[in-house]
Image (cartoon, rainbow, N blue to C red):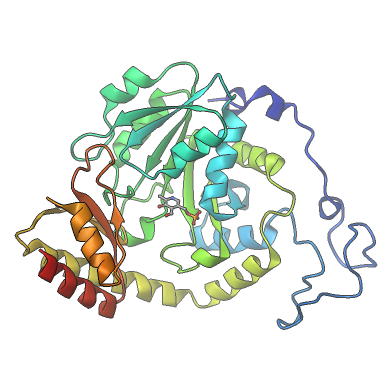
Length: 350
Ligand SMILES: Cc1ncc(COP(=O)(O)O)c(C=O)c1O
């Protein structure tokens, strides 16, 4: 598939802004970017050079993640959270007032919001009762102006992985960008689509450091995709989108990456323990299987349960107004102590 044929005409023709650090990167007497050559007002972290703009090509980040995933640097792009990449993809491929985006639901709400902000029509289609892709639904909704299909695996808020063969079939069948958001993939034993992206140049895999890595505060996400598509992302991004502080933290986090693996093990163990406990409660109709760091439960009176938990200082997310999710609450897996408190509280409520 020729990805550039899907790109909006004005983006294809765009002459991107060339920043000072695009043209020159390195040492010297840097008088080309109107920075402050005297220094920075923040000096607590030695060697950070916060008075200078960061590398616009994201070379440091791309190097680290390229080694980590054994994926070429040319296939990686970093955004201010994966939310920024969702927005950029919509702006690259979808012409406002003409194109549309297909969103199998229930799923993460930002896909629709990002489309709404960009004045892009969304076609909401239902997942099957097992929260898998329903090809009939997608077929009915898809037309020649459908530019992106947003998928999420493991899906938020249902927690399940999508069948890999279904995703591959979508990539083959539709002349459109297929985004698979793998924000929660670290909590699943298998199911990552990392090998498939090489086969399908219309597949974009989204990842984030906000979940398993415990770095939601630094706002960093990335995508793995065909190198032509990555080039377009670089063309449209803000010149210095990823800050020096974020890069510094990520570099340090990778030195310590075994901590992330320990977190994952603990979260999976707590997920299992909490699921078993919740399944014993008569007031809970279903505790859905989860490959993520949350559990979706179904009960008769979700709002009442949510409010009673709030009274005890425990906040969970009501998802009961989403399609196919009547009665459902989403509970993030907390620390062991937090889960014990949740269990005591919910046991008393139900
Ligand atoms: C499925 C999914 N994708 C993306 C995000 C946002 O990730 P980031 O923090 O990288 O913007 C979330 C946040 O909850 C999410 O659930």
